[in-house]
Image 1 (cartoon, rainbow, N blue to C red):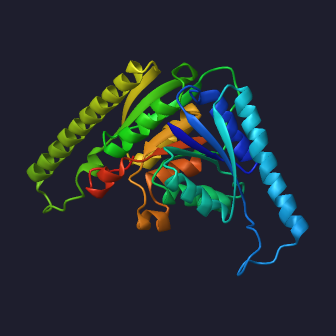
Image 2 (cartoon, helix red, strand yellow):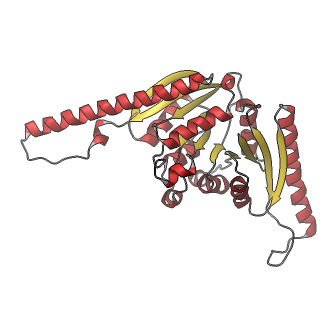
Image 3 (cartoon, one colour):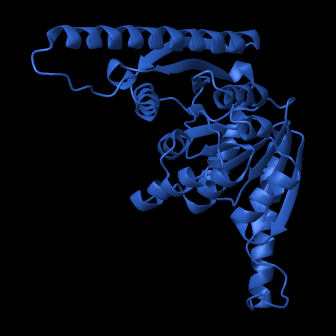
Length: 313
């Protein structure tokens, strides 16, 4: 598995680095550390930057890349350092695409409520513009226990791709997994239906139908959770729990993540939807903005093109 770790030496980048050290399977990943200097060599059409400033900025990014690389080598990773120049967020995406990375790891360093709303320009841009899976890290709690991971699944190609990315990336001995599948509630199965006043029989039929459909949805969600949990157990992961919970998807995932204090949440995304990109309304966005760390997995491009990866969880 090819992993691109983009770092600027910030606190959130160091949290992402710590995530690698704690969670990643050293023998399973081919790791590249990337630091991007925002200034290119001077040329036609380039803004003039004092030579000393240009040199200082470049030196800083070489230092950031080399220090992270040495730290990861000391932790027994096979790692390559790379320094590039140009627009940081664009170069991360261009390199991820041109070099066929499977996973891009970035820190999200927003601090104000406004920055949190926008997810931070670089992490948000990468999340929406690359076809690779993306791991966004805000913080990682340092503790002796294994990292607690919440995997959300609805059985879609996007959700299955996200879970598979985690299995490829993570060391099973370092994680405890809970699998969550979200079922529809009775209110979500069918929109409200107006019936003539006093039509008690019709109202009763509708209520029975909604209750039956909600029960079927819960059973289907439980089946999805059990199947995904079995795949994790087969790869040596400890599965703590399998949940089937009803309600709006984003809210259920975030409520569970916050209530139980999960360190990492895994969701799928069909990705590259310009409406989602503009509105910031998708499950992947909500989870990436509001959890300690989120792995947003993508289905194969062929699945997106033919529509089979259109679901998102």
